Image (tube, rainbow over all chains, first blue to last red; front, side, top):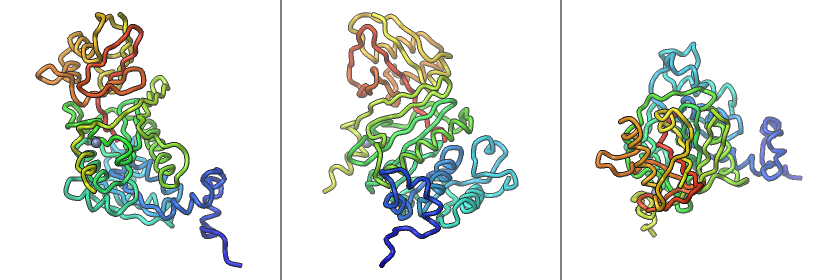
Length: 254
Length: 92
Ligand SMILES: [Zn+2]
């Protein structure tokens, strides 16, 4: 009798507890294993996304992040370690992810997302998780995600607040629908506790898992806002901007 | 009429509080509430809320109760409404 299982014995052993989720099961796990995800920056937020997706058994992660580990990364960037100070962040991240899950395939890109590399990064994956700290990186990623019709989990934090939404080209607004231009005041440095970026990262990872495995109700047309100062959470309804130039380029295509 | 304003992100930091009630004249719309708020505070607050020309910042997210206020539309407020004002964040 042929093996009825979609997974290897080791995979079944590792993922047993999450396969008990009834509408996920072994079929959901096989979908995660066959999936690829791009994570733009693997700092306080993206590092937790990457770690959770590696733990959950997503088969292939493309991670993009430039620069070397600094002391000021270590309050939140959980893939960076003290013994790796001054050395490339991307290597620290790769090492930590493979320690957790040696079955994982990792494409480690020592660059941040730009207009020049966004297309080839997005091409390699099924889904994008956008964790970049600068709007210009997020806008470059958004344009490519919409153009290539890939879902993008959009997550961000500031101080004790976190936001997450799931963007599906054609079905929901895109990032440019929400922010039609570069915000004037935002700067690269912002107040952050690791527990806040980690909260945003776990929420975003769960959205990615749901979209890839096809279960649950992703945050479509909904911005989840979390205020960890008062522990209040809100589901705010967002919508497409009919004038959005990014959405329009794609809607006009056959 | 009285309307509750909820502040998030940098607007909250600059205001130093998360929410307050304000008095608006009947017929006021969401943008009027933002302009009134901008006039009540320091220059830093004004820059978050308005363009140099005095229009509402196009990247500001406004929600009436739980629904987004479409940019540029005159959405009238009613007594007892809650308007949430969120400046854009992208911290990672
Ligand atoms: Zn759009």
